[in-house]
Amino acid sequence: MSKNLPRELIADTAIVHDRLAPQRTVVDRTFELPRPLYVATVGLYLGFLAVMATGLSTPGLAIPMAIFAIFIVAGFGLPLVWTRLAPESGQRNLRWTELKRRGIATHTGRVNARDASVQVLILPVLIFCWGLTVVTIVGSVTG
View 1 (cartoon, rainbow, N blue to C red):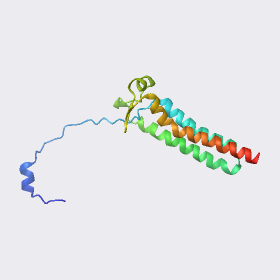
View 2: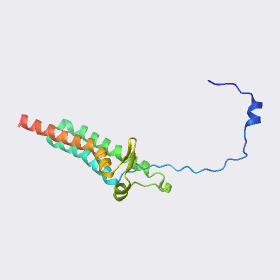
View 3: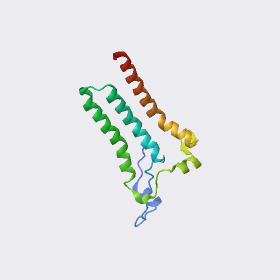
View 4: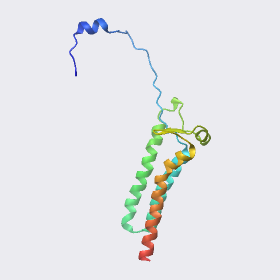
């Protein structure tokens, strides 16, 4: 609920400064994980598209596959650009050695490098394997 406060009450209790002190805000724009995990994720998604494009090659799928590839590259490229907008912040992605030594904090607690890698890569690996399975089934049915 809001309450109407008279100006006199606010003027008596407020601390008024003539000018504000400049404050520098440090923003962590990194996603903390090592670069090879991002490269592997993009590679697996693009690999899925490559498997589907070669296994189900029809002229009608050329444009949708190209659009999907552009979306994947843009989906990972835009955050890459975003992390480089403020290089003076001093933040950077973790290196493999740091991830192995310290682990990474998640919502459910701290996890080690192996568990973090599994969490990041499980969906892309499953999607890639799903693509291989679909192409294999289509090849065995039609071939």
